[in-house]
Length: 383
Ligand SMILES: *Cc1c(COP(=O)(O)O)cnc(C)c1O
Image 1 (cartoon, rainbow, N blue to C red):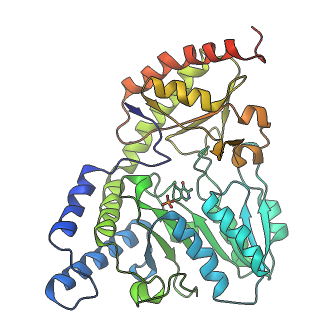
Image 2 (image 1 turned 180 degrees about the horizontal axis):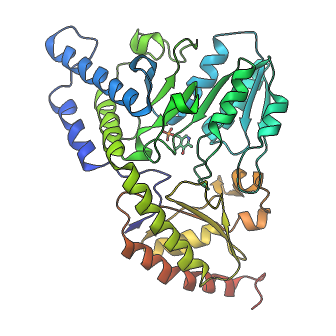
Image 3 (image 1 turned 135 degrees about the vertical axis):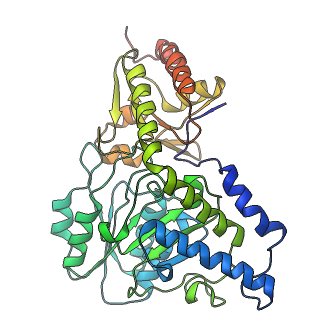
């Protein structure tokens, strides 16, 4: 099998699984227990917190463990809103992941004005629009660090600076960048940052929200005093240990891996673009994740491409979210101004730690034939 869907989820690194094993089999005690095994589990959690903090240039007390990226995004936006009643405006980008977008939309139920920021054809947010809309009534600006579908990287620091001019909080969903590019939250001037373990070779079901000291936010889950009263529930100790291990591995590997993946990704695009007519790259040509390739193939459906690739044991993804039988083109591609019929023919390859050059060559070998076959069946295609 050729797995090229790393932005959906990455396989857990065997070294991560090994690090976690002890915390299932032996050190399974509850970190809240005062006996020795309990205290050892607690030490593992606190050590992991230090590893994450060090990885992102945050402080350990700024790390709040969650069940993943979705919870971290919810905690940032709702937690901040529930802790205050002055500011009534929420600004987010039109290409956010559903975890942010639907959380913001939900907040309109509580009287919040929600404003969606447009992007250009490469998927970069309109800074002038943000500058115009932000004011003293703005609670939070939430703009993702890099987009999961097209990989475009946003001017995070510039947006944070606009937020800070008006005393608003800046949150970034960095689920697609943590572990892929070096992140320093001080340098980016980010107030809140979401991350998720399973997108960078850690386990599923664990993530974190980083919150700069001094920012007040409420818990969404009430119960015990875990995570300094901000997230009740017995800590997912194996998950947290695995998440920290994934950070350590990434820290050591990021520079070489970024270079390696970019070369493979660019070879894939060059190989396909030279053989298939009428395809277009989606996302920013340079300011984009090194592992992500998204493009549209005219006259074919993305879903048909995925199924044909699947028959060749190649796992890729489409930008369109196919839910309950209705085919809605990707909100990200539509926001970028790509016409619906072209957005429907989009395909995403996302590469990762175990992607080999032979696998890329195999895709270059089979995809042109698949496209030709599907086009021959399309009434829109004239040769
Ligand atoms: C995957 C993803 C999420 C959700 O993270 P989970 O840990 O799966 O809940 C949020 N934002 C982005 C950009 C993602 O890619």
